[in-house]
Image (cartoon, rainbow, N blue to C red; front, side, top):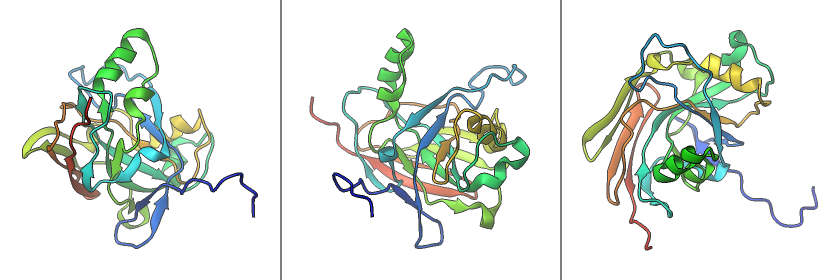
Length: 231
């Protein structure tokens, strides 16, 4: 047994749909724009940018979500989450889905005002994206049971009013392309999560808001936003 200088942090994990097992989380990669937000459907595809969240951002998508500090514009982004189950580097598109263990629906919660400020001066997005609890995710559905979804509604409503709706078939980059592209930058590891981008309709949240969302055939959730922290 290793002689650590202190007890290691407990591994973050997510429930597995239909099981009492949990999926251990390694790293969280997040894709930039992967749906058309008013741009032409036939526009030339540009390889999307990636950013990361820490494993501490991952929580079960249930109950109350903490309203983060340091923001006046706290926003929702509903996304397909890809869970990697087999290590790989420079994975071909043809083999990419063999490395996918399962899928979930998740929220990329964002301090939008911090993101806009970072964009304005070319700074990294992590202060806007990488806070604790910023990635609530539903139980992971194993691909061995439900396959690899190519289409299906993705949607989100706040207080009963729909804000985001699209279909997985509208993603600019497919899951196999995303996995392959990312694996040419870093070695993917079992336990990695990839959040694959959000459709248009992103907007701000307030304390007490109730969010419902999901992806057909993968999972649905309901969460409530907690009180805004004191200044």
